[in-house]
Image 1: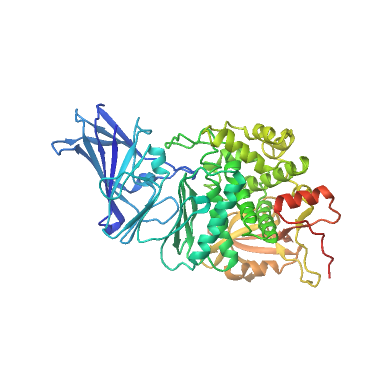
Image 2: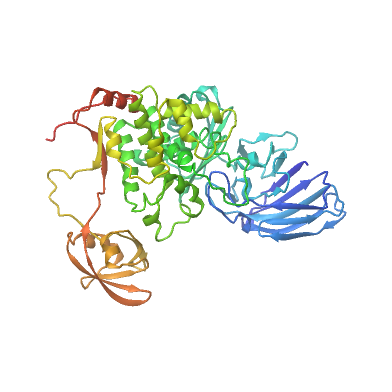
Amino acid sequence: MPIRYRLDARAPEGHRVAVAIDLTDVTAPTLDLIWPSWVPGSYHLVNYVRGVRGMTARAADGSATLPIERVEPERWRVTTRGVRNLSVQYTVYGHQMIDEALDVTSDHLFLNAALAFPWVDGHLQDPVELQLQLPSDWRVVTELEAAGGAPHTYRAPNYDAFVDSPLDAGHPLVLTIRPGGIPHRICLCGEGGNYESHRLEEDLGKIVDASTKLIGESPLTSYTFFVHVNDVPDGALEHATSNSAVVHRRIFVPAERYEIFLATQSHEYFHLWNVKRIRPKVLGPFDYTKAVPTGLLWWMEGTTDYFSDLILRRADLLSTRKYLEAAAEIARRFLSFPGRNAISVEELSRIAWVDLYQPFEETPNQSTSYYTKGYLVSLALDLEIRHRTETKASLETVVRRLWTEYGKPGRGLEEGEIQAVAERATGLELGDFFDRYVRGTTELDLDRFAQLAGLTFGPRPKPPDDDSPEPGYLGIRFDDAGGWARITHVLLDTPGYRAGLSPGDEIVALNGAKIPYAKFEKELESFPPGTPVDVTLFRRGYLRHVAATTGTSPPKKYRFASREGADALAQKVHQDWLGTAWEAPKPNP
């Protein structure tokens, strides 16, 4: 059944667009239109339908108005009364500049189709067409195929491809690079970005080259980097032939902030292979009506995160020192979660829909991110493979095998199948590793794996001349509640936990001295470990006193450093992994 969507953004007052869905050759007595509850790459349920108003249906020639009713929150039903050609019309509100968005302003339209268009039940895999009505001076940037005929008309082979192809319209700055002869557009939207165009072209080109070299080939004929500069950053979302990122307009300078941007782009670009084509079987074709759990998100996201930094190292956009510093910071964040080993990384993946994207006060004590844990498990697995094969294989070997056996032929992965592919690719038996660190909850001994590459891992030592006292620590996280420190989390097995502090407590004094939020952290640190502290707080509106004793603060920084006496194999692994020769540790001055 031909399905044609029309969107009119010529009158964006109130941030609404007018939409029509034209359906021809309808034979069914009723027809259901359903809005998605999520979009691929974003594993949480969202009420996209909330902005829809004014739903009507009529015969295409205007001869009859047809009954239409909302039978479920995301489902409308049209009674066709024998009409074969009909049109459904409504308006949608859109004013949110995030990576999965419908954003409508007087000078800009950013569209992820899932937020504006339902699919026709039973016709999810039918071809669709989109026609845009826009101000005459607007330009459209999209990876959708131009359909010809009327201006701004596009087509997609099915609804899955349609919602996986965002578009931007307005007055973007569009740069074009051709790494490997494949056109890649950089579509920059928004005002005030402190980017330098030539550097963006050069650095994104390096990411494309390094990513393609790592896999061995590209599935693309073209690609678009959508970069929206804004005052509120949001992140990025991968698509089959593009990615959409919302970043702070000042992220491009200085270098430390720019490296965050490059890491994001490297991550999303690597998704071309890992997730968009190398994918769990349940992630395509998609069921947009409910959560679709899979135990493979640690690989799809965490391993992608691991490769994103490795690609920057390969492209020489991160020095070896900065690469190791970034990995150490990820490890620090991971180690700050008492619940990091409460469940396996496979289970973390399965419960993403109700865990990572819906955190609450107990989350740090019972969970962690499958991004960070997946990153570190992937790093450990990579070093294990390089060491045991004497650098004849690596995690890169595994992902290349996944590409040839699964991604390229369009074959989905079964749950738990990564181990078997890794073993075929490397010739190793990896059951013990997967039992411990993927299916199990064994603490990841990062120092042991670091030693395989001639490194050590641990807290960064204090400088020799730093004689400052150890700061006090209660093990609480807090935010600003009207000028007072309100506890948001109490970490498991910490002084605050043992003292009975609770999320929601508003701390107003320590040992009788009033301490506002702005000074709370510094004042707390002034109580050395082992100091008794009378914590004065309001709990659910009543004044309380809680007796606590400060403890030792966990390390604020970790590091990977050269290991004394690394053998020849460890040095070889280091060279193979990071592309730089291992260096012996330098003596302390």
